[in-house]
Image (cartoon, rainbow, N blue to C red; front, top):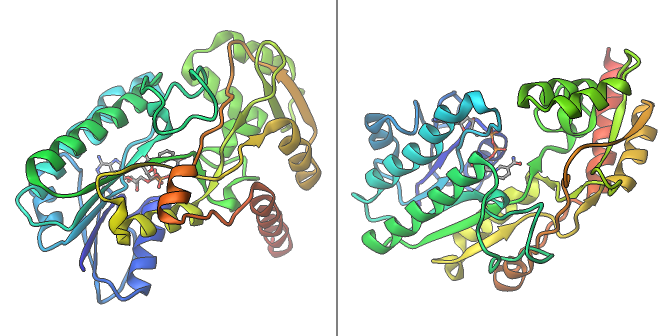
Amino acid sequence: MSVLVTGSAGRVGSRVVKRLLDAGRPVTGFDLRSAGISHPAYREVVGGFDDRAKAAEAVAGTDAILHLGAFMSWLPADRDRLFSANVEGTRVILEEAARLKLKCFLFASSGEVYPENVPDYLPVDEAHPLRPRSPYGLTKLIGEELVRFFERTSGTPATILRFSHTQDATELLDPASFFSGPRFFLHPKIRQQEGFGNAAAVALLKQADDGSEALVLSRNEAGRPFRMHITDTRDMVDGILLALDHQGAAGRTYNLGATDPVDFAEALPRMAELTGLPLKTIDLPGAGVFYETSNARIRTELGYEPRWTFERMMNEAAQAQAQATRAS
Ligand SMILES: NC(=O)c1ccc[n+]([C@@H]2O[C@H](COP(=O)([O-])OP(=O)(O)OC[C@H]3O[C@@H](n4cnc5c(N)ncnc54)[C@H](O)[C@@H]3O)[C@@H](O)[C@H]2O)c1
């Protein structure tokens, strides 16, 4: 079975490509960037998802599509690009895919289709009302609708995976990383909040800044520590490949991610211990980040079992950091 993987140069997509090639499957990658993978069974199309000619070239000859690519940004300045990549791009790929007899189409959606931080109930399961609170989450919800429309009209079975927040373990303790930097480290967090135009948050963070880098234990305005799921990329790849090959996944929607959420009040002191950085506790304006998502459906129906706890991820991150320090 020949598989098209979109987002093939990305965190998740590149790992999926490698796992499929290792399993002896022919793969096509489709991304704005090259994945830099050289393998006799690997073909690559470099271009934008909303470029019809490129999309047609990418889908040609494939039996299954894993649409894992997307643009992730929460900056107002990126709004046009967000909708072009995630909504128009998904529509164009689906229209080109409808010309084929595909065995399955799998779509990487997001937990942001739910009102994660102001849910009706916890843990959030797949039956929870869909009310995205970010433009990015809205693009994923529209993507889900496009996928289900394609499934109804083309007869191709589709699976939607609502991804948890996902990152490589080695990104966790890296202040320069896209997610961990602004989530856990003071200076990247100040830059992120400046980008969002959150003047009150910037002022609070700057009050805590003595010029040297620090970790931030973020809490909401009532002093409740942030809590969210952080899933290791390897566990996401396992879930995607499981859904690709499981007949029971056809037509289904699953939350995919770690079983237990990460409580920042427990995680940040441990991160401070591992990095040797000072820890600042900051109560940020608003309701803050606080959610728990159930992965019970995919565990029960498909037998999914994540292997990377947050503690395991942190230990690996600390080892990687120690190795880098020894090498420098
Ligand atoms: N990482 C997370 O925390 C997270 C959480 C929820 C959902 N998701 C979803 O999971 C999927 C994979 O995430 P990831 O962490 O690997 O992301 P990533 O940013 O590492 O990879 C996404 C890839 O898509 C490509 N891309 C973006 N816009 C494109 C366009 N217009 N045309 C062609 N290629 C384009 C990028 O070049 C990149 O290589 C995405 O759909 C993302 O929205 C991720």
